[in-house]
Image: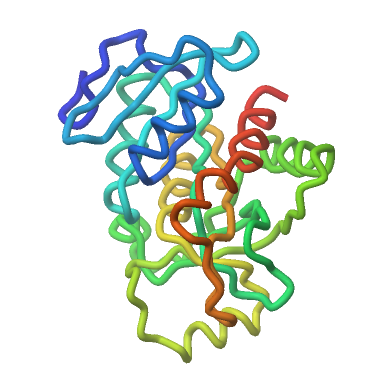
Length: 234
């Protein structure tokens, strides 16, 4: 048990999927895991542990933004022995060829700032995904026939962004999508020598303004969860 995670020792699996929304964690656990049980509800940040194809899995909400994600990732690794952490979440598309419901597998995550900036100081550290997870996720997506894009994403500090100039440059430089957590997940994983990946579903688009209705989001996220689980145990 930690300040933010109420689970007991042995209740968190070495493989953890991390959606931002705790209720998405509940949905994913009930939909994809066998014998899922609630192991954390501290501060309403729900976490569940069960099995997938006989493999122990925890699905733990991380909250919104890199500071919140950093708390949960650090405690999961340091206090509960997590070895593989995969962010499953939504993102905004930034390239014209990236469509709503497509899946983005994040090779790298650019950012203006993360909670790790104080450690790196003047260094512009380039956080990236674990290669074994990335390779396995791409193979899983290809096998499923899911329309998937692999490349760089942008992890933003803010949801209501007012930097059209920055968005223009990111689009120009091939950034596929924007979300708010992956860069810090990759930083924390690198620091502790564990595996990390972000598998994201495009729920809206910065260029077209198109967006998934809220009632359609969960139904569209199934491919992302299955790709993440398959990659974790490849």
